[in-house]
Amino acid sequence: MNVFKSIEGQEKIRGYYQNILNFFPLEQRYVDTSYGQTFVLEAGSNENPAMVLLHGSCSNSAAWLGDMSAFAKQYHVFAIDIPGEPGNSVDNRLNFKTNEYSYWLKEVLDALTIKKAVIIGNSMGGWLALHFSATYPNHTSALVLLAPSGIIPPKPSFLTQTADIASNTDHAEAVTDAVVGDAAVPKEVLAFMHLVMENFNPVTSPLPLLTDEQMHLMTMPVLYIAGTKDVTTDAEKAAHRLANLVPQAVVSLSEGAHVITSAADQVIPFLSKIIPT
Image 1 (cartoon, rainbow, N blue to C red):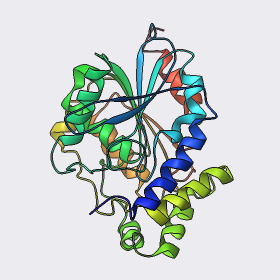
Image 2 (image 1 turned 90 degrees about the horizontal axis):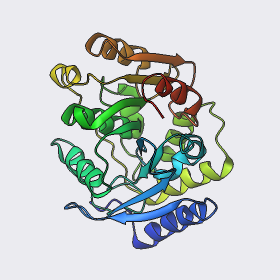
Image 3 (image 1 turned 30 degrees about the horizontal axis):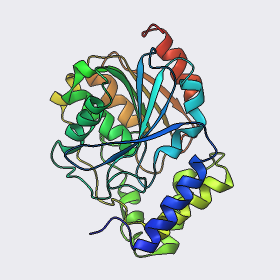
Image 4 (image 1 turned 30 degrees about the vertical axis):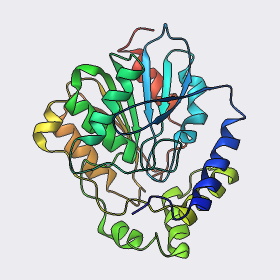
């Protein structure tokens, strides 16, 4: 299944995305991988420690624009468009049931000559960050998880709600509103989220969970940030499993929803204690 519902829809999404990027003084580049071209936004000095940002499902690297300038003061920041999502990377979706996404990300880091990085992932990007860090722990200096998938199963109610969002626009908009919750999201961002839901075929099946053995491999510093009003998963149960299997993990729970509009004010102090800049 094509990830975009039509060529016209693909052009609408990418056009809107590019218009957003044009307002920001960020380097835009592509790198080649065996899985296809990958689009990257870059900011900050190459003399600073590397930081990799991984967006969530139905999104792209524009999701990080609110935090990138803050991160770029101390880090060399790379926001990467995940394949098969509504960004500028190759539009074919990789296999979630194998390690393809981790292998793809390793190729991207190699192309960017990044040997070790802070990996920050949001939602599905958190799932990828977890799997990458379990597969390549020596390449992950710290792991930051923002409302990640992959620790515990999603809520059955969310799976039911999202089952037909690819074909039902009204349901898709209702899911968007539920995921956003009370978060202060600019109207332009909401407009883009609705545009994506109208023109994109999202992942609706649950992402594979990390095994206990995979979780034990994550010996780097870990920060987990999530909201107790998250409609996608039980953040408290996820935090409990993470803390049991990754005892060094720092957990930060609030009453927020799934969407986390900014995390720099928590992430930067956490990293400053463990990574010299």
